[in-house]
Length: 324
Image (cartoon, rainbow, N blue to C red; front, side, top):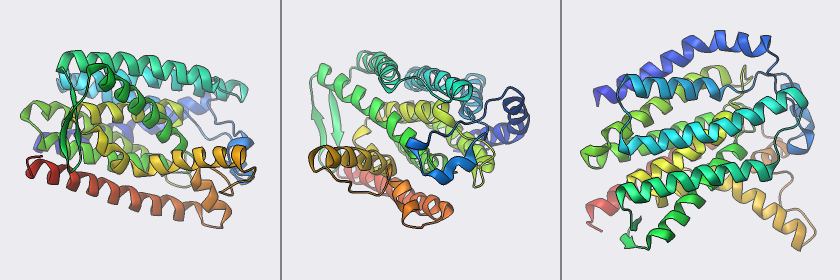
């Protein structure tokens, strides 16, 4: 437990100390966010030029510290692989956005996410011989290996995009991810001793995100960008898979589910009914249109995310303690 706390504080300190110099580098090289009006309200134009690709520093800190603390093993390899692999395509997207105002196409982004997800899923299934899923309040349910891989790929891609959709307000994605990562850190600690390093990596990521929030709270000095949102989202799903509790992810990451669901509902309503359900999506923009202040939305979503994380841990304990 002491090592977990030390890892969290260490990653926070590294990000907090290095970020000012990293921000100067981003400004000097012109890595400022280019706001695309079709993806947000008109008043978000004030965020134009805010340094983006902040997630790159977080990813570097997490991976370097994981190596230095000797936390890379079978339980963390796939997590770090997913983090690095998906972050790379996110970094390329952020770079294109800063240079041209556009990013890579959604289809290209999705294709790369699927490739990384398939690699991670196959590695996990073969290495750990996963052939079941833990269903909350039910217990282990056996499934075919190929079906397990399919569930894993869907979870990784969906969570990656869900976190990315949440990254629309200052502090929103970073704060909600902190609660999700701490929840899985607790679950990893409560699991078999073999997941101690996984808990350590969760602590490193949570600490780096808290350090990032120091600079991302409204008004943000830096944006995590697709580099961080896509990468940490994918890694979160892989963590759920490694703990055997990926089906808790919709509860632990409830904000990501709601954000994604709002977009799906909006698109379906427009195509089927010819009308909108929400004023704007993802749903945090809907509340902006209703007149909620940006900080109100962020903090209220944090509260919901924290409750989801707590309920996820409770569901895990209830399932385990009942011997299900």
